[in-house]
Length: 198
Image 1 (tube, rainbow, N blue to C red):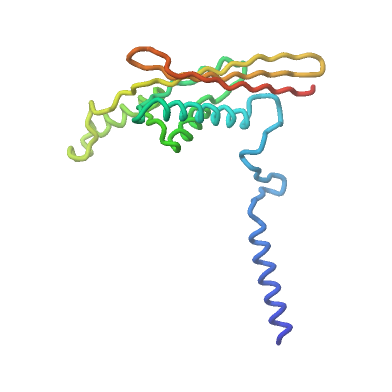
Image 2 (cartoon, one colour; image 1 turned 90 degrees about the horizontal axis):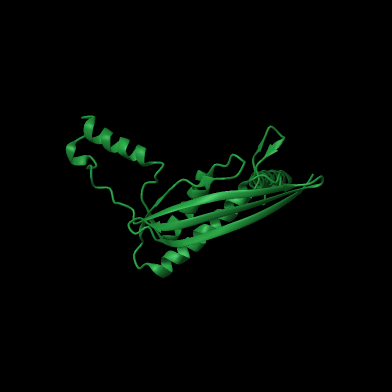
């Protein structure tokens, strides 16, 4: 009886340990999940590590500037980043990461992005003109807050090659401009160089 109890207990703990160890799922035996923050070194093209490095640097710099310069949290709108590289890069992912980190730090408030303004006006129109909603519950037209500042950026690259090396230099520049005066009140940049053996 004692031996059976020990065997059942051993099987139970083995199953428990096996269940705890299987925290990283696999797909079809040949695909596994990695850590999203691991350094990506597959190619010299723009990748997830580059995006993370740029977003972290800019979010930290802009948050520190805002905390030092403003008692209140100014309202900011974000314009699309201009991609001046020869690669397709989803620059919206960069600005989304920057906004997410800044919102977590509570350094700034964000108005609807320029890219999302049409969605905002469509929603206001739907609520006010469709006849589907109680008037007392609809968002009123003309109540949106105007942003005091606009944030916009540029991503550029320089690529050099020879018979054995490919050297890629990226520069991401971000600036914040006072909408009323046109004054650039903050600006920073992040540089990344990647070298690949050919």
